[in-house]
Length: 192
Image 1: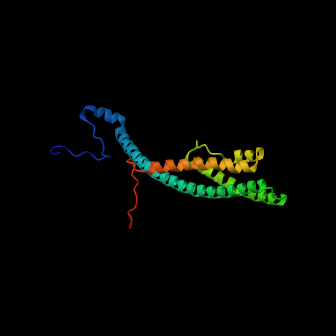
Image 2 (image 1 turned 60 degrees about the vertical axis):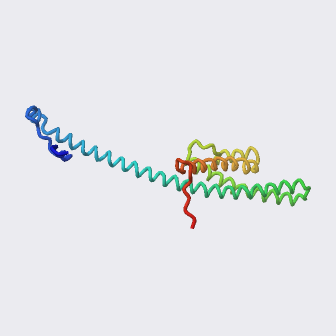
Image 3 (image 1 turned 30 degrees about the horizontal axis):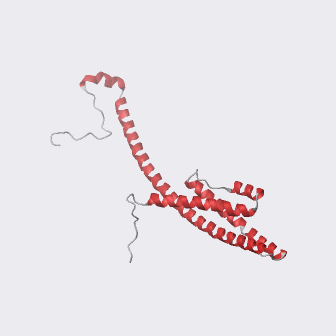
């Protein structure tokens, strides 16, 4: 505005007023030091705001990479789970048909071979879900091993992965909804 003095630079020396000249002399330039400390704290606040923005951007990038990892692990779990369910069904059908002991033993062995990959993928999905949401109700390795010992490998290969698949699907759906614009419309690339 015309008629006003421009603001003093941030590090400008504070000129003592005639009313407090004795105080200026007694404080030994402390006002100048306080002014410098204020400038430093202002710069630190600006730095912390930019650091907060950077950390937020990094957190979003990490969350995005964790979501991609969860999608990939969930897909692998789903594939191994489908194979396990197919072999388990084949084993049950073979046993119900009254096949020979050798045939039933081979069917049981083939169904048992599919259990470790299912448990491994279910554990990986559990860990990734817990990274996204520490309160996620997934089942980890120790409860899976306890279920395997107390019940049979088939129950731990059928129940636990299904639970982890449901929870991971819910987390992915929540992340997809959180990434949508607030008006509910999805941004889709233009068709070429």
